[in-house]
Length: 236
Figure 1 (cartoon, rainbow, N blue to C red):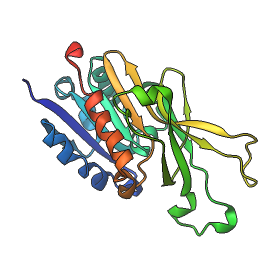
Figure 2 (cartoon, rainbow, N blue to C red):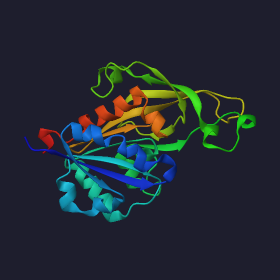
Figure 3 (tube, rainbow, N blue to C red):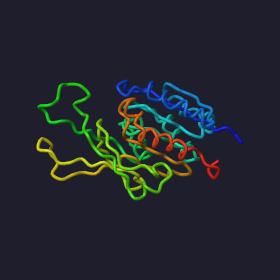
Figure 4 (cartoon, helix red, strand yellow):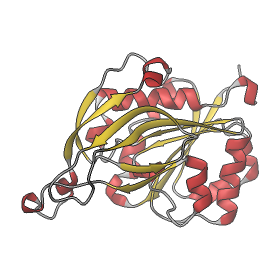
């Protein structure tokens, strides 16, 4: 059997600990038989030969920018069958200026509501809220999330703008609060998949910090997502 090749691309805003976060998953990839290459920039996306031989891309690049050539290389690889996955801002808040990247991924971070203003102290914890990740009916059957029950987190709760080509496996609900401007609860996808050409995409929105990634439910979803997204025989 040919060894699968995983490409881990990390960088962007340091607040999401791109090195520490991705290092957490390298042993999992290697123990599952992947040859792993780690890159500290998106330059590799423009390398057609490297991308053609890649079965899975794990991206952790918050904000930052991507060139037209890099994005073309990434998109072409996914269309040809390369899997693409990541978590939190490393995939759902990447390359804000690129509408074509947003089209590829299918959902974009808009905000993470915060605590009541009088409780804010100026640190990242101002945006940590207790919330529930709720599995959808599809999520209860899907290989990425099957067997996982609804679970609680106390961290950033992503409000995501998305289209209906995503297959939502889990959601989270933003309630109305006296200090916020919206007038009814809003449900955002928390985990979704997307088919793009022959490729599979998996986005997991929890993952602000290593401690969240170490949550057993979050980690299981991300790791299963890596396996599920990996190029299948039919896409080779």
